Amino acid sequence: MCGIVGIVQRDTNKIGKNIIDSLKKLEYRGYDSVGVATIENNQVKVSKEEGKITEVIEKIQLDDLHGKIAIGHTRWATHGPPSKENSHPHIDCKNEIAVIHNGIIENFQSLKKDLVTQGHVFQSETDTEIIPHLIEQFIQKEQMALKDAIIHTIRKLEGTFAICVLSSLDPDKIYCAKRDSPLVIGINSDRMFCASDIPAFLSHTRQVVLLHDDEFVTLSHDGYEIINFTNMKRVERRPYIVSWKPEMAQKGGFPHFMLKEIHEQSSSLADYIRIKQPSLHKISEKVYDAKKVFLLAAGTAHYSTLTGENLIRKYAKKPCTSIIASEYDSISPLIDEDTIVLPVSQSGETMDTIMAIKDAKKSGAKILSAVNVIGSSITRHSDDVLYLYAGPEIGVAATKTYTAQTLSMWDIGLEIGRISGELGNNEYDEARKLYNKIPSVVKQTIVRSEALANRIASWFAEKNSSFYLGRGLNLQTAKEGALKMKEIAYIHSEAYPAGESKHGPIALIEEDYPVVFIAPKDQTHKRIIGNIMEMKARGATTIGVIEKGDKEIGELVKWKMEIPKGYSEMITTIPYVIPMQLLAYYTAVKKGLDPSYPRNLSKSVTVL
Ligand code: M6R
Image (tube, protein in one colour):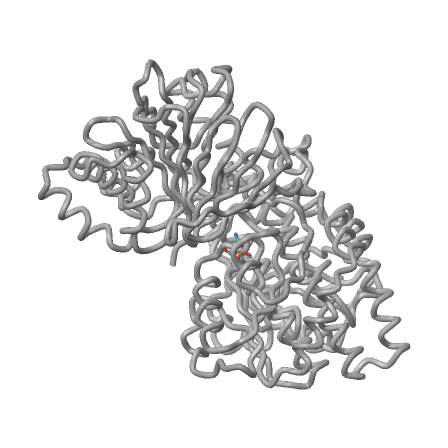
């Protein structure tokens, strides 16, 4: 939900600039306020303010801070609205201990009550602020050293946290710990990092140490020491080299990360196809053999699992349900040792998904996941993982990871089709040929639809509400298209099964009301024509995402966004979403909005 980063370096060179550079890479995690703590002349110095990083550095000179050590935070408000007071870092009464936190401390109210009784004075409404005061309390009342006081404090915390602590009592070190919220270490010859995510330090190092739950780290400029804070055992973990390249976390000449990531889709999908993963066969076989299969995800990832649900039903010929992670309780009674739960996630850190996985594991289910971020929490809770290889995605609205997730669903679906024999050898080979062409179809679709999306956006930007209609597999494509428009252009957009639209939604149609149809030339084609006619007859302005050369629909709709021919029966769910990503992007731009950082949203929802 929030982004945290800490840096310990050998020299005092540009610590403020360094921490701000790293924080900018984490802004996708939250951007309602920013704060940094450093140590100058043996004193903790906290600088913080409400607003995005670029706004805040205009008001206070964050990038001018000095010292060898700094922690920084970019916030997505949970406890208390965005304000200077509620921004992190938070400090103790003596201004000796500064803390940044990502997560939620569930028992903060009772801890706060005790601390207030002991005379501690609080400045904010946050749950986080109890942490520096509790550390202070252990030091004062129990005469503990700083490190022991931090460990005793985190053992008292209930809920989820990744925290970093900096203190004038031990001015050369950062102490950090995690439970359920992400935290990674980056190692460079003259600088050590701890951060919520790898892009924070990717331009300095690709050497990464992944931290596990209940681990506590002492970070100094020349090393790191990990212990498990529940049993106090030392943990030996060597760094690994991440394959992501620094430029992947930069805009590369595009005005926004979102547009860059839309354009990256042909290469990210090609990467996924090129990297042959042994887990594909294992996962597909286990899904085929299982008695019950549930797919689990949130947001955009959920729409990709709707493709998976359809394919598993079709090729494994068994009931399979895709469930929204926060609604997991409704299927919990059905989970047992004969169940496969297949979570899909970009970040691998979505808290609703993690909590559902933990419950399913307790009931004996096997967890087979499809995840983008290697080493993330979901991968560690999984029995087997299919990686999405989409690279880092910074734009809050998922684009390249949606197509990668959907491609992974097709990959599993086709493999199950081969295993079950539902796809004969020839059919399977033909399907794989089409599948392998997806990256080039996506590329052509972007080239063909970008200018038109930009034009339609001028009209769409004036609208308050719209419908996205689809049938069959492409109902989920419509859902994903509508979600993009809502998320970044703030236009109410509702996706509906096209056939169902006359059972209610049609009542809202008036002159020039936008209706987007996802209408490939497949078995849904004829019936969707009827739905377009119904909408037009009531004054709607229609946009069709259609196959190139489809005159029947092309002549009916006001705007046609065309996809290359030959994909109508198979794998439409990937290219047909592209024009809608572009439409949402350009509509947001026309409205003067920043599509990469939509209001109120955070890329990884690491709270329940
Ligand atoms: O990291 P995840 O894939 O688990 O995230 C799930 C959702 O939070 C995410 O898809 C969200 O809906 C996107 N920002 C939508 O564009």
